[in-house]
Amino acid sequence: MWRTRLFDNLVQAATWMAGGLLILTILAVFYYLFAESQYAFARKFPFGFRVALQPLNSEYRDDISMDPTASLLAAHREGSDELDDAEDATRLPLHEELVSMQPLVTATAQTADLNRLRPDELFRDCMRAPKRAEQGERFLLLAFAMPTYNGDTMELAWEPDVSFDPAYAPYEFRLRLVRAPEGVRIDPIEVNLNQQPKGRLALPVWKAHSPEEYLKGYLFELEARPTTTTTLATIQQFLKPDWAPTILYARFGMLPLLLATLLITALSMLFATPLGIAAAVYLSEQASPRVREWFKPILEILAAIPTVVLGYFGVMLIAPWLQRLFAEGLQLTSGRGLLATALMMTVFILPTIISLSEDALRAVPNSLREGAEALGLTLAERIRLVILPAAKSGLIAALLLGVARVMGETMIVWILSGGTPTMPDFSSPTAALGTLVKPTRGIPDTIAIEMGNVEFESPHYGHLFLLGLTLFVLTLGINLLGFVYRKRAQLQL
Image (cartoon, rainbow, N blue to C red; front, side, top):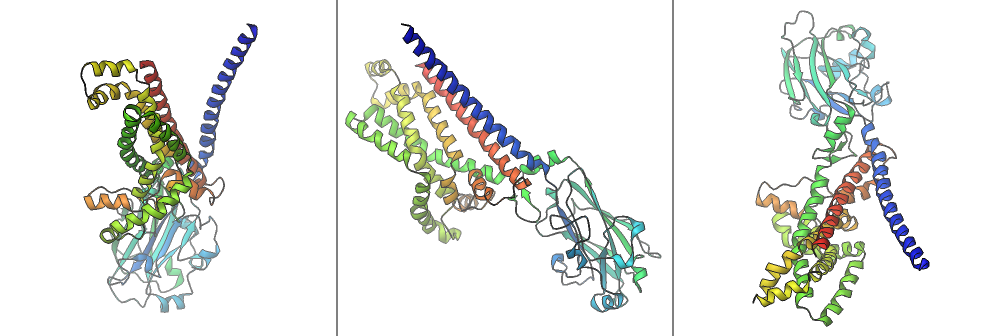
């Protein structure tokens, strides 16, 4: 007797220990993801604007980035707080050379102090190191004409640097006229570059006849004023619709990745739910014992197929078929995309849904079936009115577990999605169809693709862990919801 009691106590202790270990593992994973994602909140925020002084008929009027005389005022990873080789190469040439090279000139200085401006320390560009959101930045810009310029008016033009969008910077950008040349009458100028990121201003011509007169020309200030904290700015940008972490002005918006993951999940469940439940109903209510005996092992074999094999199966069969189907109308270069991924995910989760749904249906008491049959209900009516409602909680649990498996799957998405993060577009039927068949990228494959090449403990590294934390919370919540429904189904039965 005491041996039985001892064995029961050991089993109970082992059960509690396993449950505690599982909870500790979940907490440890959550803590690790949370701790590593802190590097996302240590980021600094780059920005850049190109400014040029141009004649009214300039050939670079619509694209300042192509103007060789434009000045770059920027704070990004290639800049520094001290003079570097890139900026030294843009030092203004001697006055005689400048006169023969360009009629209109913009020049910057490495200092933001008006009293430290010197004519022999002027440059075309100024690139500084990016700062945290709480720290602002100021640039000084001189604008003047050379004696060879013919005309009474010149235009100061500006636009964001290539790939920079002011909406992704936690600053308010202001371009302000600090001082006009002596003798020039002009209204005060202050432009909000967030509201008007690209524009032009007409200025009366003022000519500098010597290097000393450079400092007497138009003096503008470009100021980046902080508007929020680094933590809030990181969270706000994480919720934006652009993921481009490797460009000069990096963007870490996870919205296209999250929406792609949710769309793949939704489409997969849309395809798998009717097929899975119908197959489960057949196995539970109509199939003979011999058919059931053969079908269950087949399901287990399908569930055991490595996902990388399913991914390559999709590349060889599903993607080419979709490309042939939609290539002419949508000009597809590849069949890999959201729809191909969803179709292969359907194959991936069908065994799970069928098996769990069949278990839920078979758990319905036979007394309910017999009562329904005694009332004269047909098989279809028994299934629709009695068995499916009685097994509802178990079926929902099976579907939720299928959702969790799709959301966390990496290899199939990596191989079949196409690897291009894009925002879904459902503005028209053609756009919606294009969204379904064109390349996309989800959260799991983004982490897998980029983690191997990312700089350790960099902001990019931290954002990948932030993506992992988001996915972990979503899948954990769905699994817990499925567990609740399974417990409810057991209690009901």
